[in-house]
Image (cartoon, rainbow, N blue to C red):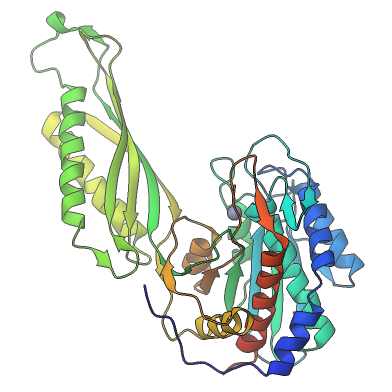
Length: 401
Ligand SMILES: [Zn+2]
């Protein structure tokens, strides 16, 4: 997408200058290294959460530890209040990392390495530094900043229960920034996505092909028919389009049936994904899917059940959203230009905030590499940039009309 510029207030150069001088690269790096140093695979992020809480408390911030449905690792919450009415901007991050062997933290030639450096302890350290800079400069004249950090993000180990519980318990701002490893473009729309597993069954036992009773339902034939119907659905879904996110889709990646070549099976399984562009359409999409399966079951004399695990809802950010304008102004103030707008290629907690809290999410973080590998790497200079952009976005958004 090419919408490069948005009309928005320019920042007072003195405020930009003050924020840039207040963001401290060494302090940011120390925070990142401390968080990376606490091994925190998903569902076991307690030590990283404790460490973040200690760091914030040592800085003089009042820290809350809501359990948020995960006693193993209570969440970390803190706020910076201006004392004047205005919007609340939330900075949200996940402290858990994928289940890979621990890589210890290291800072070398201006780059941070180690478990979670890219995804997303570097980003969390950046937004903590943004909040410190806002406090030290007094640049936040109205509204407030809310920091939330939690476990249970990375799948398949986590099920997002903690961010969902935080939202349910009211730990939400008017808009939210999420420092995932995506620096360009600025994602203003995302498709919803569900992983499905379909199980087609017949009654009775597996049987030799020549001993099959007359009219025995054929689960393999039913599976083939269903796979064809899903392809037809995919073709029809091409009409459901969005200018940024593309189109709806259904994809089959696995088809399994039978034990040996001459035995009539009792079970056929089909696995794949369903993606959609329309915000808040998960229930409708699932109902359509269920209807198609029921029809194939009726036609083939089989019984069909399925799982439909929604990984994230679709959303689209309104072009007139004040968070978008504040972010682009902040980005321009720091880097000289606003970001091109685009789509978000992955599902993150932004999808959950859009669907459950009804607030605008913007995912923006460092141009980090190696997420979900043993080679995570992020430049300290880029984390400084993220901290400056986050702080200035808060100044513009919380005090805006
Ligand atoms: Zn992440």
